[in-house]
Length: 514
Image (cartoon, rainbow, N blue to C red; front, top):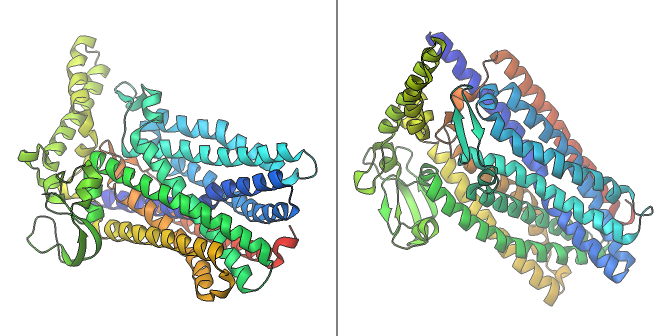
């Protein structure tokens, strides 16, 4: 028995590692697609409006970068969707009716839209009218972002499952309110914050590559124009990123308080909670002990309460409050939730047994009612220890704060670049230009940190409160998962190296060749 448990635990770990690998690589390609598509549309709009051939040349250069990234991003995205069926079959069965709907709409509506007009955008310069080509470019941008919307609706439902009911006959969840799922506040906030990060990364890429051309004294006029468009787009979307981040923090506070506590390293709940601007966690700190939480920290007074409750007096629950309960704040302990979850599971198993034995529908309703009453805690019934409900605190805390710090730096950089480009001769500021070049990878690091916060911060849940990750995994041979993990590692790394190589080759050619 212990050997089987250990085997399944390894199975889950390898499945998680494989999916994390695929998701992290996929998100190296997605942000550039989301933002560069709109930057292309803006540049081409300027060309169509002014009939200045230089803007056509600029648009075509950035289109070549977009096309390379788009093709490789599609490949990793398709693999990730297949992994739900191969590695997470229990998850797919339990919520396939809900999770599959947004992904199906994404494929039918959004992906076909962007794929169809992508061909026109890439190959139709001399085959269709300038206005129709411009329309195609805008439709590709809209389609790319619609794809993100439906995917993040699905992910948002995993973080905050609503609009569904549990079918005891089939042992799976079914959608009862499509609009509730599609317009979930968590899904919407995740979508807005994710596309905003993609826009900022795309702006960093445009600004950084343009800065490189200026440093090399090549295509100066095209590079300056690209830099101004990129920095303007980046500055506007950085503000959008902060606003969507504020909404995201509010939703996390309301719907996933344990994630927020881990993000901020809060063990004891407090009124008028401050936001940690910078801090070093105490590695000796454990849940329930009296060790100090931080070795060092700088806090902005009242800021976290304002973010989480729109009130400086708001109460932010700590990890200890959530694990052990807080009657004063009407917070149930994890132990109580585990008992309710076990009650739901026991009633569900009894329901199945009684149904197979031919018990009347009226008698079955007794067990059905018990399951439905305790369904909000269904997933807790699979936990053995209350501390299992706490995500990895250090990883969540540091990735969150690194993401915020980098996002603040990008905002400052866009202001500096735009000012120097508009009010001075930016070609003289070599250090700033080199900063633009070296900031490109920081944008991707910030985006990956954001996904780590979103996904690691909600552990142990595949579906918040309803299904732990350890139950969601398929019972596969560890050897099979390990082999496919390393195959994907080699494949994705090769694709990434290939993309970087092709993009660098395209940059070397410059604006004259497409």
